[in-house]
Length: 429
Length: 123
Image 1 (tube, each protein chain N blue to C red):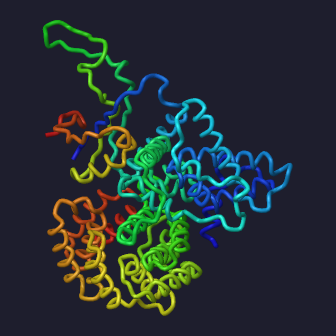
Image 2 (spheres, rainbow over the protein chains, first blue to last red; image 1 turned 90 degrees about the vertical axis):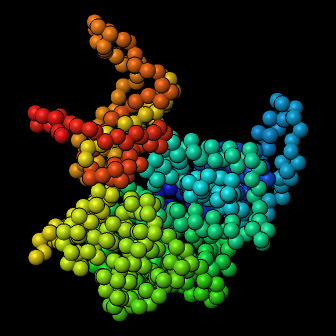
Image 3 (cartoon, chains in turn yellow, blue; image 1 turned 180 degrees about the vertical axis):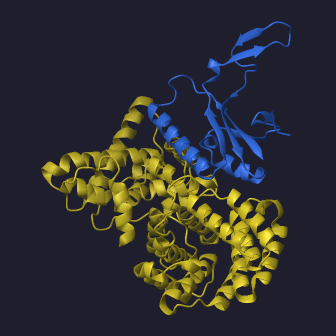
């Protein structure tokens, strides 16, 4: 489970988990695997994530203090849950004593310590994810909230992933949590009629973790392992949802190729030039398995299509060839089902592989014309246009298009690659 | 084309921002500066002292007038200036979006009309 260990390594680098003793290790494992589960349970009755987080942090702190001397309890999760619940109850009691304001009904429904069944702690992480991606919460906060609450990443870690200063990210997370509480966003699975639309928001928030723009951050963009973990969690919560499977497959199949995406010199390597022996076969087979289960449900969707496209690319690792006609068919369906600038540019690139660069360029220019202003700063469109013009031997136009693409590229590895291609094009006869 | 990215934000009161937040901002601006430099688009980058440190100078009413403080009090003060050489507005907007100051303030993207380079104003 390399995705878990990589997530774990990052978490363990955090504060409070430096001590390598068994108690600290056990708390670390509990933190990694159970943070979202415990938080979802603690916040479910009140929608107060901040209070639940404080209580949970207290419980972890007590665990670090008590477990080394008294031993790790048989079920660390139940122990942490009980301590955190008591802590929450103490807070309410003292708040009630101070303000003499009657408590809301839901707050008295907490189970007393003795009622915690150590073997059947319910999993309410799906409700938590639905809250994070609720339509009343600003869209740009969905993914950060999920990384923070479901996986327990700190505001600093989430901020770094989004190239936002940690204090700014912390402010955004606090604001979103205040809104969840103030607006009374419920921790529940919506009615069947609403569920599909709400699940789409959840899937998009997980996808958001996968497409994080590293821009001015690490030069060689690593595929965020947190997206992998979130997608895997989601498939365990809704095992029958084909799009959740499709999303997990998409992220796994893409992550599998990450080691081949940058060469030893730190330069970006495009898919066609990647060495398949560097791809991760374990992730590829996991992705394929998710895709197989998803397709068996017989409901096509955007993420399954994107995953199927990735699966066709990964098949080059087996037989050394790429089935371009199959890719073209998949891209056409994808662009019809979920049209976007990205899907259109990809369709143009694949059209060029099957029907030649002139056909690809015609597709791309038609797309850009239709998109108008929106496409002007869309770097992938500009880079693809440059490649196609180069292949058509329209040298001057290609050089201008490369310059345009380079001016819109903020990642060093990718800019170096485009510069390299431009230099090569400029030397062509 | 030369563009000035003029960074504006509300000035916090003294001690309102923690040392930690200042360190974070420094780190973010450091990464931004390195990215601008790596892309070969950076001409100059200055983050300014608070407007309390400003002195305004004018002779337009005859003699010299030196005023303590900015020319006009505004809610969001000029806080930094990045001068970039990029091909067009789209590229300038792309870099303005990446500026850490855009996370808590606004970036004004203004093409320069002329600049003094190599002993003369460019036309």
